[in-house]
Image (cartoon, rainbow, N blue to C red; front, side, top):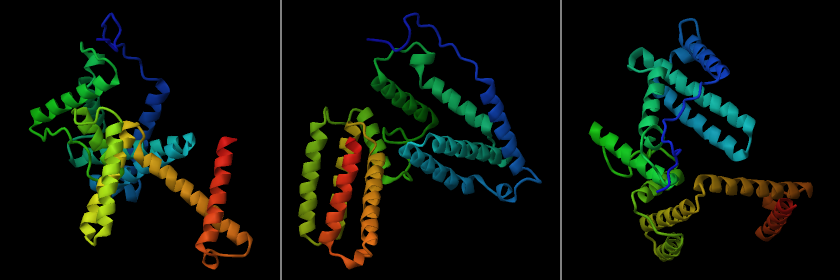
Length: 285
């Protein structure tokens, strides 16, 4: 079996953290402490871990949006907001929860070292797939020691957007060995679920229609997973293209002194196709 570690099997050399990074982090922690302390910001002073949690989720989505847009500057800014949110929660928690930013950092350090035995221990792995399998096995053992749920599907937050949650559940099931051997299986599943959805549409059972639509979406997500395409990002790109083309339709009509209500669906479709053709032409150039 090939190993991802060097043949000498020596422990990794920890590189020193750059001085500018430690200085910036220390300065940020000082700012967070000042905002929370008496004489600081009234808004920050009244926050709790519970009130800050939704803001952290929002910041994570804003960061993902920046990544999807390909804006490095915006991504850097949103990552800063995320980092500040984590440190603020650590600062608030230090007052009455029994943990702080240092405990958060030490906790994740220990977790990373335990779950990378091929780096910090004697284990050998044959590629990233085996790394993931080992990670899940170690995670399961940790949960067993804590008396927690040991299901292979635990650890996927229910609050995740449905497409992302479906993707992660599928990944975990696959890591446990429950998966098609190749892409043909999930593609065929789409055809099967589409047929069942069409059957449901012929009836009037709204609940069944909803279930079959969900099954069809889940099948599509499994194809995306097999292709290593993030469905959330793929759908976001489609929505962006739809909005862009729709705006061109509106602008084209406005240039002729018209609105959407003034024209037929056929005319709108013609303008839509023209916008799509222009977009494709720009992609090819």
